Image (cartoon, rainbow, N blue to C red; front, top):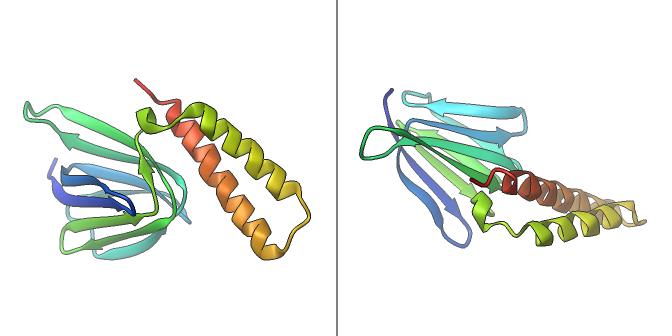
Length: 139
């Protein structure tokens, strides 16, 4: 399988930079996969699980999972750039904190509030649930 250059940048740090065999990430239309030779493309990234498959020095496939928040992905001339608000590996997620965030976001969604506050609460809930889901993939 051919590799391509991948750069995943979160607002607080570079998450991944290197050669990649495949990338699967959450978009508004569902999980989307990218491999070498993909056509130029831009899309929104939504909170969900991102999966990067790359090869180590021995030629063995290595899978990196991450919980990602909102962002964008751009494929251009064989290179892929992913810009997201956050990207966290399962081992970086504090499950107790994520559970508290889910509970708080659920309470906020149920509270009477403006449409803007309601949608912000829904976004926080989606992100918190996703972090909790991805944290369960620890090895």
